[in-house]
Amino acid sequence: MIQNKEKNFVSCVVYLHNESDTVEAFLEKICQVMQDNFEKYEVICVNDGCADDTIEKVRAFSAGNRLSPVVSLVNLSYYQGVECAMNAGCDLAVGDFLFEFDSCRLDFEPSLIMEIYRRALQGYDVVAAAPRYGVAFTSR
Image (cartoon, rainbow, N blue to C red; front, side, top):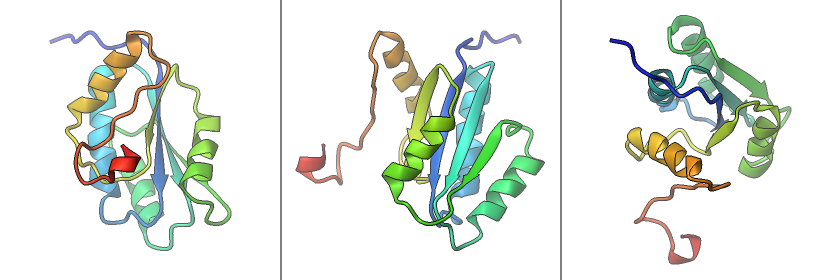
């Protein structure tokens, strides 16, 4: 069966700071969504001073997975925090659309990624998804 995939090139920037427990499953799901829906995509993982084996797991995933010929790793020289690390990854992204993941905790259905993409196609410059519950009212 031939599936029509999106022609737009998309970039995913993933923040990494001691994500050893979740990084492999997260990358698997994200790359699967990208593979299923886009002809071309890239995943940029930003290492913000990981002190565990997160980076080894990213390298192993990239080397041994059919879904990941497009995973890049950016190593920051020291811990910079989420905002600076994500900015570094975004500066290197070349996609027509950019997905930012500031955690490897996939607490949403992967199909939400495509809902966000479709909303952006309606003319919005910035589209964000946030949890409805478990977040302080002032952060919503």
